Image 1 (tube, rainbow, N blue to C red):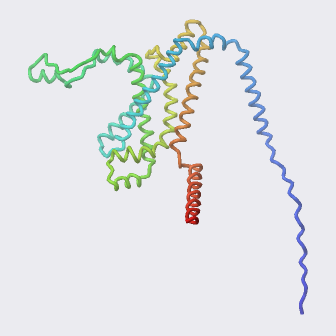
Image 2: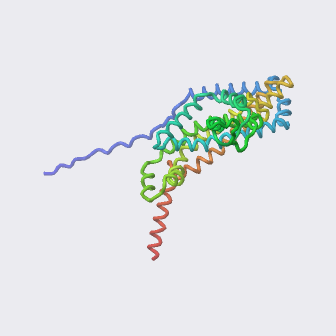
Length: 325
């Protein structure tokens, strides 16, 4: 005996009435920010303390442009010295030789501890320690006195300290040597971020330690080194204003402040300094962006997606070739 069981049809659910989430706090924040921006723009336009016509008329004069060139030259020289010396100190820090590790640690300890303004003023007064800087046999007079020769000198050539240690050179040395301590730590962190298997594989191929560092480790470490190096370059650009206390006259802030002091318009010149540093920093940020993108190829989500698409395209191309064959 069979029984017919009828199953009731499920009622079709009504469409969902989606209600967007409201964000009253977000709109309130936008309104507050809009009011603050309007107040700031109104202050820039109406406040006579800015004296925009005077600022624009004086911030492009030849002395200011000479100071701008000096600031750019100081930044480039200090960063080149800092990066070059930083690579050497980082390699010393990673060395198996305890003496090299100790010397590199003392260097980074000292130059990271002393403020750059103090270093700049100290290097500006190094002429008090030596009247002349000479090259030759160390302790030549002491060696001569040891053998009974009173006027023995084994010096090849020398220069007057006042001629060499000018304000510009002293400022560049102070900034560059200080930067080397920070770059050494950045490079050391980048080198240690590379997998040790890379070094072991290179050693198995017979590469020397220098070749491994130059061809294997450093190219991979650049992805980690570039972002903080860009930040250090921007910080160096701003720290060049410290050499105005050495003093260095061929520097942007020094020249802007001199114009303001001479015309009793200090505030407009300080605003002009802000605008110049903003413009220079923006250029450096653009360069940092393209460097990071260059050294980050194949890394991250976008890089992996590109590699995956290339692999799919290669497989598809290979299958088509086999089918045609």
